[in-house]
Image 1 (cartoon, rainbow, N blue to C red):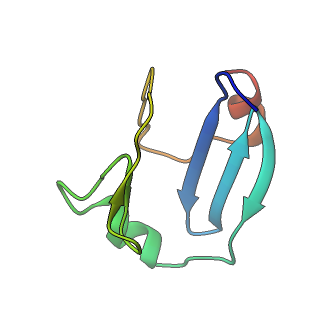
Image 2 (cartoon, one colour):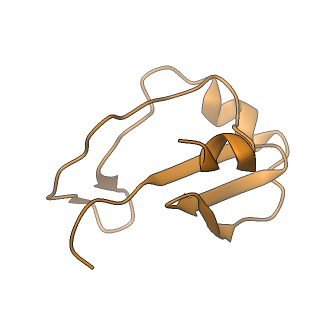
Amino acid sequence: DEGWGHLAVTVAKAGMIIYWNGERVAHSEPLGDWSQRVLHVPNKIRVGWDTTTRSEYHGLIDELALWARALDDGEVRSM
């Protein structure tokens, strides 16, 4: 599918949730304390980098935003 889409990812103790155009498309098991360790390590967020294959994303990213908390389903849908 060509064109723009809206990708959102939330990370919290309850797990990671991936949304595509406002709809949940994947989720993980509860993360527990892991989420707090990841979210509080400075300079560790990399956008467009796959650490498994060590490859870069070659496309456009527009309107990147980060929140200090995980948004709920309704907040993601309203974007």
